[in-house]
Length: 374
Image 1 (tube, rainbow, N blue to C red):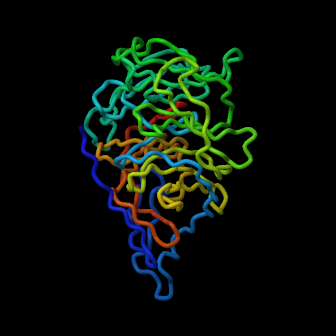
Image 2: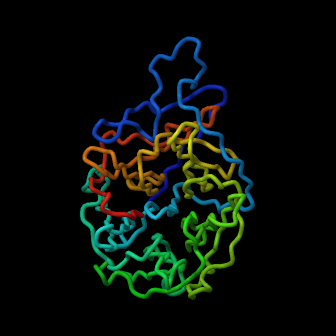
Image 3: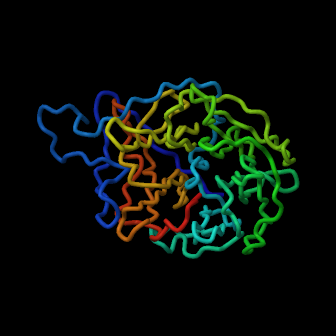
């Protein structure tokens, strides 16, 4: 089993202790979402950190239930139609990428090569595992069906359909146990109904029991921005698979996206969210630390991306962010922002050095041909 590497976690009091000043390579995008470059020599009168972008006000959140603690490094599935966390489809313990073609509506898996190179060879060849996925609104993956009544490492595919007959229905497409082309998925099982367009949905093992749970911030009738968890019953049994919703946190009304990953490295999963900044069309990636009740900003400029994926692409035990950058050269590159292994925040809550700039690393271009990447 891979040994998780502890993250060095430190929140500075009164001084700016560290800022990532690594510039993003010109061959990708002009602005690095993961880091803001500090001047080499600040002016004499400037206070520490005042030359850096100022984070937007953190949403006021009220916690009703905390996720179960665990070794650092866990990741989840993002709520958008495109973006999420990679699962394992071929039982080699490396995170693979699941995608849907916007042209053919094929469902594809890009198996991890087993070696992180920072190049297209990391995810070299796609395997088509199913067809006819044009009527699906949301696609994720999770440990839902299990085997022999126990959870397993292989990912099942979770889908919310959008056809007139099945709109809002959530199904699990059970993994057969072998990555084998269009025979990879076996049965399709309805597990829930009533999922609305605009809901923020992500998958995470909230209580750390080995089964993945579903989290949701409803789009309708939710003025406080409540996020709920539907715990897995530990029995894969149709519409009895998920338990009734439990409120976990308030205050997500203006979140663009929600996710979970232990970015802070304290053994308690954090809420990862995308929010608007104080200037036009400026998006910030931030985390809410369930352990301390504090929010921290990982960086600005994420409006230059149109899909985010949280995964451990280099298998060092820390959650990385992978983004599709439509304006890159060549276009639509899939770019990794590796976790530095450290969490250091300044007094304004900026933790810009957590995610490292790619410096030209990418998993290839032309990823706009997939309208779902998870």
